[in-house]
Image 1: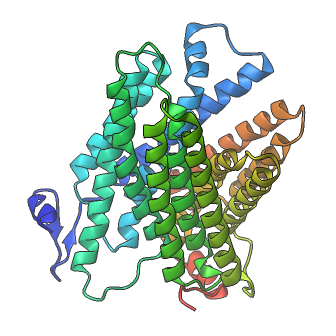
Image 2: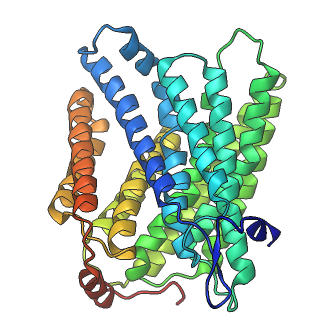
Length: 418
């Protein structure tokens, strides 16, 4: 690719002719930290407000007001795309880092600036446009990395579901973010606030695509899965979801009933795609003998939360979007433990990781219990502390334990193709 040659000052060439990109671990880690802080700030402020112990200051009030935007824009996309895309995706396509690293860095700076403006409550439209610019740059950097690896690959092995999920999620952002930015610029002088919640559809697609990609990657050591049907379902869901959401955006204000019908159709397509992916996952893992290691627990938690969302959606007509947002938490945590442990071979405290999952599972169950929201928020806070402690201990010790993860790989069967 010409793009890779233009980055000669940033990339090096190995002895076998393969281009090696500069590592983007710093940017990827920064994205994960940003997503964690946004989740703690948004979720923590909301919980304190419900408990009635929120400090009566302008700063805390601004954080409470920014809660929907923080949870929608600055948690899922930075963690699953910016974080896993910079830390994990290059390794999955046999690269040392993302291509166009400066573009990836600039994307993070734009997203970070947007988050800062959102928290301070200065100018939501400007903050959202900064988020749009940063997300576009990061998505382009990830897509270039995937396409370039495909062009240089001597033996064109099929991509894993994780790579398909990341690539399609980046493509969804590349196609939908300009529509959102265009709507903001078009209505720049309107007194009404920016309707960021209308972007819940594409964010739900990112959770669906990247989430199932991570879950299949977690389960690769458990069962045998075929890439082709998984990739086909993901691609069909991405294409139909983007078209349906874009059409609903342009129909708002002119044909509200039609826009609602298109939105319902998009939700139905996502539900059907998620059901098909879950069936494929169950078929591949049906006769597997697996140990309940930490990443697999989070993968099972994601499947349970999303399945519960389907049931609520069928009974009450709503609930899948909330389930996908909660499922994103399981995907991010499970993906981190898989990437840090079994993919990179580094130690992390197993006991604290199990405690982290237990607290999260209890908090998730209490969400659906009337009057237990305060207790659920407390367990979510404890789970966040466990996660932060596990991350800090893992990176401070920074010890490779390849033998431990090799033993796990021998114990469990591995492979995508049947």
